[in-house]
Amino acid sequence: MGTYRKERIVHTKEEGSIVDLTQWVEDCISSSGIGQGLVCVMARHTTAAVTIMENEPGLQGDTRRALERTFPKDAAYAHNASEGDGNGHAHIRSTVLGQSVTISFDKGRSDLGTWQSVVLIELDNHGRDRTVILQLTGE
Amino acid sequence: MGTYRKERIVHTKEEGSIVDLTQWVEDCISSSGIGQGLVCVMARHTTAAVTIMENEPGLQGDTRRALERTFPKDAAYAHNASEGDGNGHAHIRSTVLGQSVTISFDKGRSDLGTWQSVVLIELDNHGRDRTVILQLTGE
Amino acid sequence: MGTYRKERIVHTKEEGSIVDLTQWVEDCISSSGIGQGLVCVMARHTTAAVTIMENEPGLQGDTRRALERTFPKDAAYAHNASEGDGNGHAHIRSTVLGQSVTISFDKGRSDLGTWQSVVLIELDNHGRDRTVILQLTGE
Picture: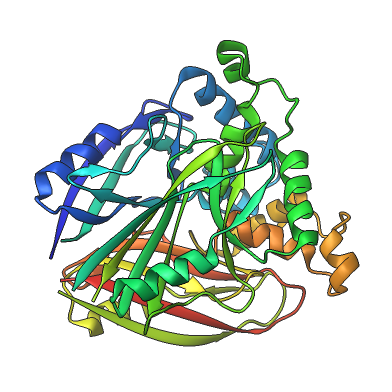
């Protein structure tokens, strides 16, 4: 039985950037020497999301458009009035999408299906450096 | 300390089908011989969701209607234009609802409350066979 | 390797109340004597959410307003017609936001970033007593 963890800085280019973490997750599972268990991937931020999607260009745009339709950037946000950083929409989107995701793994590979990718989505109104933590427990 | 896992194929009848996994989750916890820990249930798919709800007929319909109001099937999806399978809406809904859920258990039972059920929701535009993985860690 | 758990009753004052659980989570991690692993916090209810946000008054209101815009209280819910408790909207919001959250910890502290708080959001149409379970696994 054991645990294993890694930290990684992810640079995002701009609002809506989607960074694929899948290969990194697989590499960490493989490197851990732990055969079977759970792996949690989380961003240490309230204006980014860590989630699972089919990561192809069409859906990247569809996701950005669905977020804008549902939680518009130019709605009235009290956070913007008090903080002045114009990212109220990013906070709401981040809470809805989630800032961490937990999946299982076995025999040194994640249980992600063929089309599932673990991604970080930049929701803030500019690119940033994001800290991502990966933590495994299992045996 | 230990781990335990099960795989299951879930057949969904049609778009919007909701399959209750709660009794299966309880049976797995009980069979595992692990007293206390975490259990993750995930679908290996990007057009289905695994989530928690009160699973009664009224809310099943309410959930389908809320998803249609919020992420309409007939919006313009780039994924549909490039892939031609007409399920762009299903991908967005799946990412928002989540494809895995993690809960705790103790003394051989989950911590789910009286009204909480773990369910798989078919979001694609037709019934399919879905692979679900359950993974426990604990002691 | 080990596990640790705590149960807590959280009293919410009214619909939309947001109760910060962050310090309690940190205290539990510290008390557990487990150095590194995963911690899951879940509500045993289908009309409340456990999620992560920057917990400041502006965003508290923004979150309530975004939920009302997206999943309105006065939409037609079959659950309300059959159950008569007027909280169909709360069920939908709870399933979308999530009833449990899993994060990692190391050296006796969670990996939450500076602005991240674990919160319980009351989504039902009146204040209630809510049971929250915290479960750690790690070593």
